[in-house]
Image 1 (cartoon, rainbow, N blue to C red):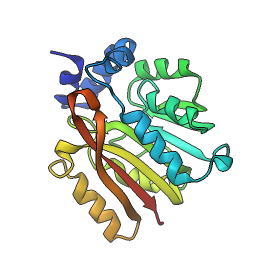
Image 2 (spheres, helix red, strand yellow):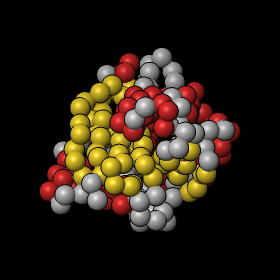
Image 3 (cartoon, rainbow, N blue to C red):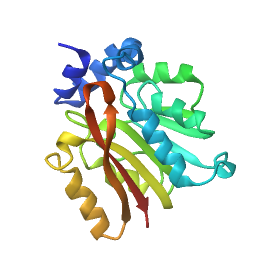
Image 4 (tube, rainbow, N blue to C red):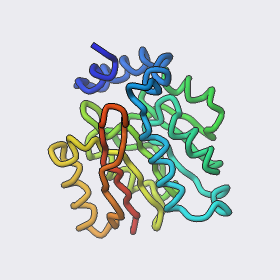
Length: 209
């Protein structure tokens, strides 16, 4: 069984941490293979910077890469001009690889299925790629993402298309909209692992309060 297949079958936080610690050293190589064409991080980063504004203000914006893994989204954000990017992830092994990328201001361990240590209104944007997916973090994480994002900031997250409705993510987003906490900007299906024709919802939320 591939590491990716194992990842989609995870059922506990401890198992998730153990798998990603084990996978850290080979993750980038495996996900970059031709049979994957893992474009999710690059596309999500582009959405973040598009919605935050012009390149002239990018030096000042603060972004959290939530579930940063080995740093693929952080690298993409940096290549587009972001200079203040923090990362959090459950796996210390993944963070060790991300640290080598040299694009993060701070890197810390965190469990996205629990309350985060960050204060309210800390970031201009949250970027979350590959974490709101099968066997990983559920829709409860969106509450925390909204809490720590500044008003008029954005939450950009990939949500695996096959579980967008069944996993409760659609209902959570509708609830946040109905509470007046966010505006749903888009939820289009976009390429995620292109060569396998796997698509994810690219959810973009504007935080209102």
